[in-house]
Length: 256
Image 1: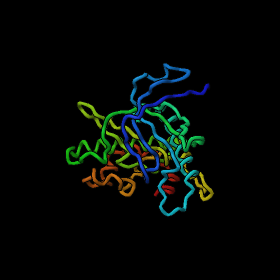
Image 2 (image 1 turned 120 degrees about the vertical axis):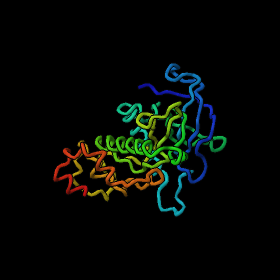
Image 3 (image 1 turned 180 degrees about the horizontal axis):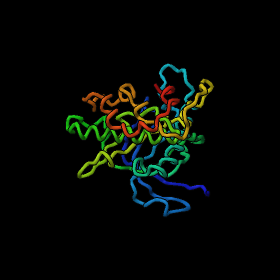
Image 4 (image 1 turned 90 degrees about the horizontal axis):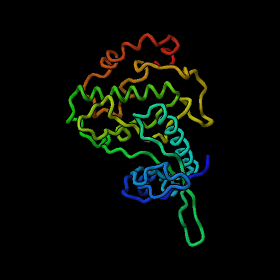
């Protein structure tokens, strides 16, 4: 594929500065070469920049270049995969790019960025759970569980699934079954395992659906506690009773 050059104009700052790891902006596409039709010229997108200069590690134990590269490669790959298989649940992905930043008059440093669709909304972290009925909140949690379980079936483990990474899209009539958007996959693990020397070999039933009855206990849902005011375990058992037939004794031994 021929390299593409994109000229961007920064519109708004979404997440910038020290201790933010990735720097996130909304941007406008000004010009694209050599394929001007790849974007709409006035389309508002989100640019996420992976700059080791802003990597958060106050203790200084980590290599910021290695960590930022890992975040970039994992997230770019995740969006590339998920925008095809879960197009309505993740922002549309517009590829990965290199950005040259001037250091002084003669030097440049290069960082990586990705471009994705901008969709108006607020995160579950920003929303007030008290404004939603219990039934609506249960539907929201079912959407979260179903999305995570589908990705796990694709052998993708989300290590940072939390309310701040779940967007409630701005719609006249919000439907939690359709209008939740998931983002921030820098911590996604492929093959359901870490890609470092401490990985422990185990049978993780790759490519097979693992019922939420085995995985989505109260600890798994802890990040969403502000949205949950009902007895979790009986609810999970009732909502996902239809998946019990997929559970094998080996799965039971591994996940319980």
